[in-house]
Length: 63
Image (cartoon, rainbow, N blue to C red; front, side, top):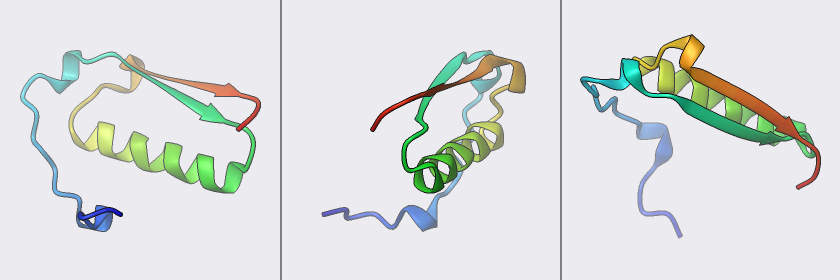
């Protein structure tokens, strides 16, 4: 059981996030859920300062 309400996200203000390279793997199955999770992750990464060109999203079949 989660002890943190994830809706209460507070930015971390990571100083060097602009240099991060991030890969996100997203299932195509149950896309209503997985695409919302992807969008939330992208929003947080951009808020933290990760550059768009350093974020790669990969869609995969299955669960």
